[in-house]
Image 1 (cartoon, helix red, strand yellow):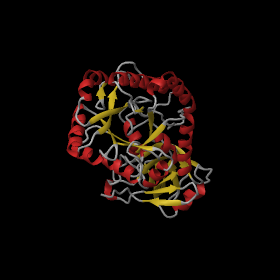
Image 2: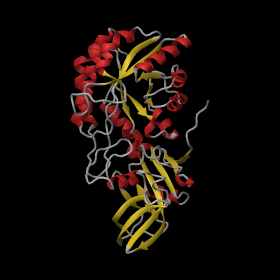
Image 3: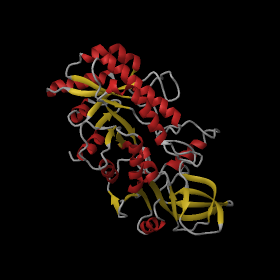
Image 4: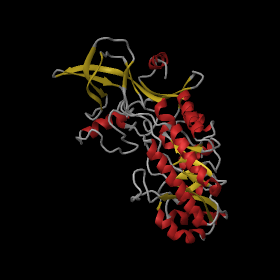
Length: 413
């Protein structure tokens, strides 16, 4: 929990900012490592590529799940090894492959990508050790596969495996399976893990040689609203090791990865803004906040979706929309008087809504408002350029208590 005094001190110099707590990130890492002994983790940079966050996470021997060439380079600059830097995304170009093939483990997403990797590897006179992303014949909630833009269908992989094995300058050494993010039910995650391990065993048998790695994908979510319960990762870890125990002799000496993005950083970030104005219109009180839709988009996207559905629990569209009330509002002042207000941002659009008709402590111009669950898929997805306003700062609270204003990511070419 970030101390109130730290937030208020920073708010004297900044009208809106993200604040990331390193201690919370490190606690999440420790919880995962203690629950999954012997398993390696890959941080999904797309969740939050803030440079201070990357430095902190990679210092804990966490690898990288990169979804673009730029994310590959960010990870490589921070000395993540080729083995622990996996590049998995659909539609990679020949340029993407050529510039990443010697510094990352490329996960082929299609037959075409396998051919591109082969072409580049032949040109460079190297053998590329790759993984293949498989679209399995199961999901988190079903034992039947579904169409997907990601990966190659399981049946197609097995039908074409002999041909793949003959691909020049390419050696398949691992598989990647990822079906869903943000799952909170332990039993569903446990069954998914078991299914992936079974698939790996079948793939290894068909391949005719030992796999070097399995990337289990992600899935472990975080509680966003007050009705959610935290995932018991210890329980999932015990089930995982029980399943692995039955087959580990057949898979040894394989390296097992689990991806994690929001689990590490989602709860570690808050968004802080200030009241810019207060006004009444036809009996309704409006609070105008600084940089909301163009600073922290999550509350506004929830309001937009509520205009188009009558459902209380609409289907999530990750990572843009998880659920209603995915960020709770806090007021940093002692005030007994309360009032009903509508919170809006200072953009020149009526879509810039944070919350309609909420009962809050009475707010005045200059007061500080905070929103939680802002550590993942927040700054990275927000339309920061809308209306060319000053962007919110990103500030990193080190485990020592020191705060550092971080700069936007840069790549050395």
